[in-house]
Length: 45
Image (cartoon, rainbow, N blue to C red; front, side, top):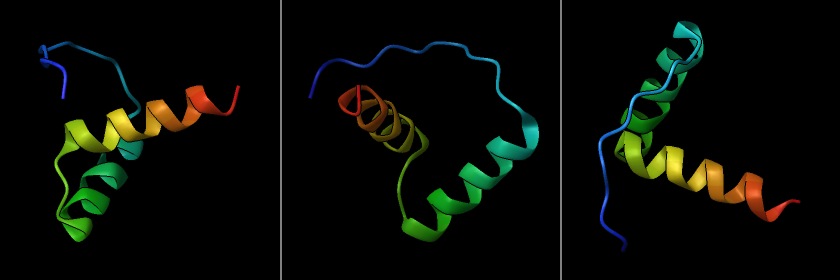
């Protein structure tokens, strides 16, 4: 895995709340969830 950096993003609060609940349910950390979602989006193009 590549080295991770701390970054700041702006995100819709209700969407972020949904992400946090999903991560808790799936026992996944936020960084992995966001990275996976971004990779999926990039692969679709």
